[in-house]
Image (tube, rainbow, N blue to C red):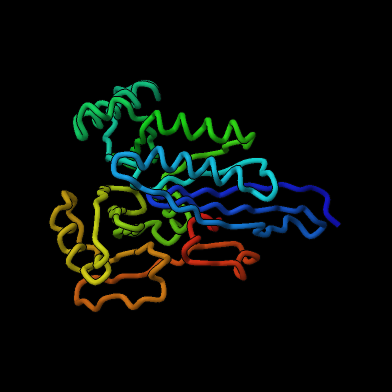
Length: 279
C-alpha cells in the first residue's frame, strides 16, 4: 500500500541534445520505492552561435511532451555552457558577496569582458586554499528558469555536469591525489584533485579520436599543470566508453568510473542516460 507520491525530472542539457528522465517515488510500508516513468532524448540543431537558444526550445518541447506532469526538476548543464576557474580567496574578504565579487574579477581577467554577463558560483571547500568557481551566461539561466515556471514545474537545482559527476563518485577520490577526467561529446574536462580537494581545472574541445589519444592528452595536461604532483591515478568518467578497452600505456593508472544508480533503475539503465539516472 502506498502512502505518499513524489516525482521529479532529471534534465541534462548537452550542446547537441536534451535528455529527460521522469522518476516517480512511492512511499510504501517498506520505504521509498523509485521507478522510471519515461526517458527521452531530444536532439538540438546546435547551430553555431545559437545553441543556447536551441537548448531552451528543446527543454520547452520536452516539458510539453510529458505523459504526466512532474512536480519538480533537477537540471544538469553540459560543460559546453560552463566556464571554470580556481580562485584563491583573500582572508580579508568579509562576506559571501565580497567573495563572489572577487571571483567575478578573476573571471574577467581570465575570460575577458564577456564574463561580466555570467552568473557565478563557488564550490565552497573550507579545507582548501583554492575554491573551484563555475560560471554560466545569466540570460541563459533566466530563460531556463522561465521555461520551468511556465510549465509549472518547480526547478530545484541547476548543477554543472562536472560537479554532478564528481559528487556521484567522490567517495573514491577522498584523501587521494588523482586526476579526474570527464568526457562528453566533443569535450574533455580535466581536474587535479589533491587529498580530495580541487587544485586545478581545464576544459577543452576534443575530436572523435580522443579515446585513442588519451595517453597523449594526459601527458600534455600533466606538463601544463602548474601543480607539482606525481600521481599516476586517473579516474575517467565516460559512461559511453565503459565497455571499451582503455588504451595501453606505461605511465597512467586509468580507472573507469561507473555511475552509481539506484538498484531499482538497473533494468532501465542505459549508458547514454547515465548522468540523468545518477543518484
